[in-house]
Length: 614
Image 1: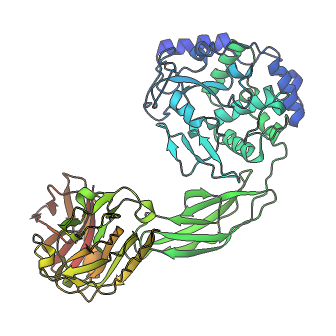
Image 2 (image 1 turned 180 degrees about the vertical axis):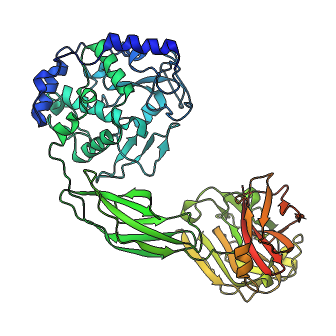
């Protein structure tokens, strides 16, 4: 901080000071709502309201950044990044809204208690203690939604403020969650509103935040959030300085910044100290190679269980209100320890449940995997022998409404011969226990879709000139002409009877009864033929993984001698590489992003590694 800034703060503190001696004398010794009413009288006396437009002048002293970038810009709680540079800044009286389309266009005035609740009446409309500067776009997104806790946001601002469903305390409506840095600030501003206007609040409009009373003011779920936030984010120097500046501007103070302990003295005078019961019945319901789901029995509490904290290997990973949780993005063949704590509305926590040990499955070895999220680089070629009813990529209607590929000749009764054929041959002799999965959907017409394979297709000619055989155990129903959509999921069909190097294809031949077929989530998995040498598997490593374009891929082999390295795409295409033996690395030039398999032949045996290229 430079000398000029230090001098500024010295002058500010002398000019504004703290609460005058005797300011709160009439509130001393009181608790509960009697204390609240005494504070209401104190902060109403001396309140000298200003005009709504005057707020922009007030913000020069109440909301200027002398604390983060220290650049004199407008301090906006919805755009401030306390740990680095802000995504955008505003100078006082410049870029005042007006119209906006996106963040950073302009700033305006945000009523932390939405003015629609009190009918935009004065003096609430221009009260600087809770009407703060805000980016226009974020202000508009917050709208008149309550504040809350959002685990799965539908929208996130550039500083991390979130909009979405509330995830705690039994309320599931849409809420707005500011970043942690300002949660206590906002809570104390709302406690000010509840105190300063307690005699007017019963006549205000309805809100999910308010219970209609002038004493308690807030609904149970919202009060618990405010109490949590005041405890989590204590008063800091910025709040003290702002309180002093607003006092100099309009003649009254926020008592909950001067005396933070009064929040609990009013709204939580007899705090609950009893923790909920320990969750029991923790069990695993499903396990894959990268995920598993756990459930448990609900805890009990003398007041109310607010939620559960979920721990993985001793680390808190989530807070939920139901009694189940799905862990994702885990490592295959890895053992994890899970335990659950119950938490009540006063923040009391139970001990952790009896730990549950869960081991993920071995990694699925995908020979082919295609989700059609990136059709420009998909593992299939589109081949058209008749008509113009080609397969085409769509952005929805696949599995879980995801992108997919579709052919649709509905109401156009012309012959059609269309194929989806893998770009490369797949060597079934290199694998065992091959399994095929796919998501399909159809509507209209009676044109069948058949999954076939060919050992002699050359990848270039007309497919009809080559031998194609139906893939065993993949039975796709023939449409009946119904207009409603039928979805089919084929999971892990055994296709291990196929041998040699073959192309796989979806064959669509229509003679005038066209069907709309949708294909998504195609995968072929299998074990590497001959198995993996476990000694070689454990003594060889590749890094970095994921690999970024331009990086070299290094190997550690613990003195094993590498005889050969092959890199293959998930569709079976071999990628040419050159192994630099003295330095133990390869370079993968001009390789597209995706998943690859590396086959390592060593003097002690063979193993395979999975590589992600980003």
